[in-house]
Structures are given as structure tokens and as C-alpha cells.
Length: 379
Image (cartoon, rainbow, N blue to C red):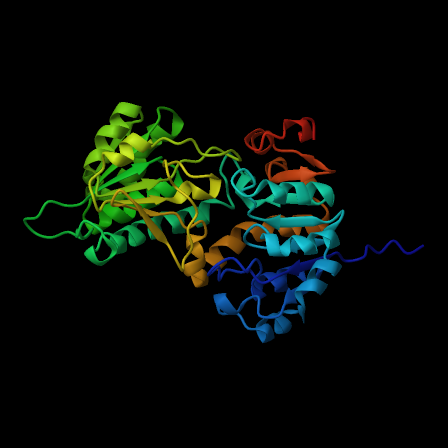
């Protein structure tokens, strides 16, 4: 009797979100997977990250069409959630697995309905845990925190309607004030970047484990520059007081799987200085700043009463040579477990399973979408 297990098929497709240049698998990843799986790559999928089709073929993958990637896949690997123009392909994943950033609480509810309808097992990078840390979200949060400050520095220029302030340090001139809402990974890397440029930084964080860690984190990572970072307990009054004076406000609040709370209110925005910049990195989960709506790399900003909003959901897509490597280093170990059939033994990985067997299996996702009737609580 032949007990040889057929290799699963792992497909990776080209991202189509505006200026999304990352790719879900690298040639190096293909080399590590090929022993355990057949690998299909959509033609041109890696171009934005600097990987040619020939690179993938040399690593052991087969180059094919998007349609074939969907049809043949046991596991479809992406970077961002499927867009409406891709919903027509989801029928080919019936009973199969989708492995990508999902952010279902913030995107069109129709995507969740499509995943449920086709009985797709949807695994979201953003809720996979290891020792309490969101391991597949962390590297992109680091990138986004850095880019948030770079974007803010650009849009503070007068030609964009900004205050005409630089985030760099100038002798005998008061530094810019950067206020960061949330002291998680995005907030920490934004604060490090801003302090390194010479800004005065205020991190607003609610009391708890993260708050208690911040002083030691900045002291260790910034050394003497840590004196430029002030950590403030989050209250509406304090948030209003600091945002009113800010040149830049960074929104970086995260509640795992759920929509972000609006901690910066309409009144706070209206009392901010004209030409100040709000960068809402939490837009992936709906945004934590009143008035935020998703923007694109082609059209990254809009204004409200002379305040400048920037809320690009896929910031790391603009630095794909680094962000693709960082992302796949975090996601590949779990993909290997999937193709080996051992992922279900990893409790942290199972927290990434947001939809399975026609039900939503992540409580915060179901609650945020008002779909608790579709929640399978004992998955």
C-alpha cells in the first residue's frame, strides 16, 4: 500500500492594491518549501520586490497565471486582503486556505461574506501570536512607524499646505512636537525615528503592561535621546491638550482583531494648529483618529479645516526590498508548518485562523462586523 502523502500546492499571486510592491513569497522561501510542497507563482509577482520570474524558477517554482494559481492552490499566499476585483477567483479556493493580512474588521464586510460562502479557511497574519507577540504584524509595524514620520516630514512642507516645519534639529530653534497615540510597535518605532531626527516626542498610552515597558524600551534603544521622549497616561483631557500643540499626530492604536477606537475626536482635530499633519497608521483597523479614511500612495493626503490627513493602509509597500524580506521571515515558518500538516498544534498560529468551516472563529472580528451569529466560539 502506497502511503506517500501528495505534496500540497502553495500558490503566490501578484498584489494589485495601489502601489503594493511586496510579495508573499521570496525565491529563498520557495527553496525552503519545495521539499514539502509544489510552488506556483503568478507571472511578475515578485517584480516590485526585485525578484524576477527566473529567480523563482531557479528556486524550484513554476510560473503561471493568476487564475491557475487560484485553481490549483491548496494554500494561497498573499500580502494584503483580496480586493473586490479578486472576489471572482475565491470560488476556486472552496475548502482551501488563504494566508495573508486580512484586517477583516476594517475592510468591506463583503469580503468576509465571500470567504464564508466559499468555506475558505482564512488565516490572518495580523492575529498570529508567539509568546504574546503578534509576530507577523511586528516587522511591518516597525516599517510603518518609521514611514509615518517620513511621510509627516514631507507633508509638513508648505507646498502641501503644511506648517512649514522640519522634523530635523536646527540649532537655536524650537524642535517640532510629535504626539503619538499608542505605544505599541508602530508607536515605538515612530517615536525612535522622530527623536533621532531631533523632535520633541510625546507618547500617549493607557496604563498597563505596555505603559510600564516604555521607559526602559526608549532608554535602551535611544540612550541619551530618550530624554526627548515623554510618556503620558492616556486620558481624553491629556490627549486634547497635547494634540492641540502638536505639529504631527501619529495614530498607532491596536486592539487585536477589532476596530480601533477613535481616541482623537473631531473637537481635538478642530483645535489643532493649521498645517499640522495627522498620520493614522491604525487605518488598517478602521483608524483611531476622527475623520480618517483610507488613502493611497497615488493620493496619500486630504485636508479638513487646514489639517492634513494621511492614512495609507499599505505604507510598507513602498519599501518592498526590506519589507518583503522582513514579512516573509515572519510568515514562512508557519507556512512550513501548514504544508507539513503540523500548524494546528501551534496555539499561537491557531489564533490567526479567523474564518473556518463557514464560521468566523475570531471573536473580535465577529463583534466588529456585527456578525456574532456567525461566530464559532469553540473552534
